[in-house]
Length: 268
Image 1 (cartoon, helix red, strand yellow):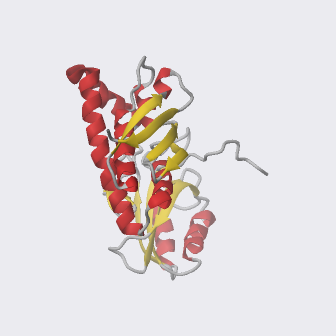
Image 2 (image 1 turned 135 degrees about the vertical axis):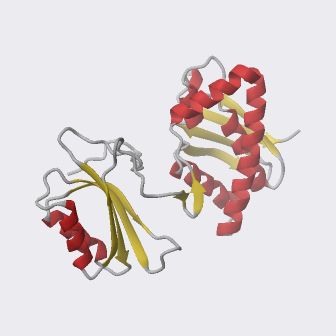
Image 3 (image 1 turned 60 degrees about the vertical axis):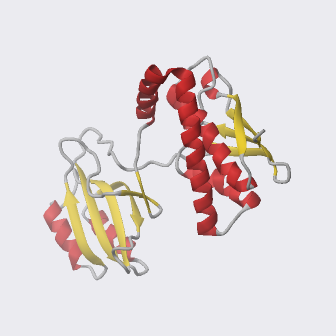
């Protein structure tokens, strides 16, 4: 059965569990031997105990070589065994090295893990409403023109830094570096990049951003608002073109446009 209705699939980060009426939420973190079938064996123990696995992820950490980590929220309201017995049965398997259980109270926030990592780099998760509150506070102090200048400059420094790091880590440049920009922006939830045109020889580009987080955070405004994004694209594309370029926002979702559009050209 085909269930996908949209071109994009939202990625849910399990920092907060949605506890439905009657559920009893627990967090579980299982350290597994890095062997085929380990996850399936651990999941079978939970399934046999009538535990509902709600959401979670598996990942590796450099601190634990040859170990896979499976961390998730589970519902034990209909479990046939208590948590202590389930933990004991997990430990008896030949693939489980350690198990941690926690009932998240008084709020259902995930609290096993710190820090949060994007790849191998520490990251933070900031709900979009917090950006609005942050920038709205700054705008009250700096006025729109002052805030625009600050955000553009900060965005440009950030974009330049990211482009150089991506170039160093993956040994790519030119149009491959532009493609990496689209991948990075979408993977971090900032928006969906569409490169309408790019001219490496003349340092020109037109880039659209669908569902730009900056425009979404500002909601409705009578003027362009994506100054950080505009600066970020200018800094990133300066590294691509190997010369300083600037970015102008021609369309903005905050003004009612379908998407944000940026024209990038060599600095005059």
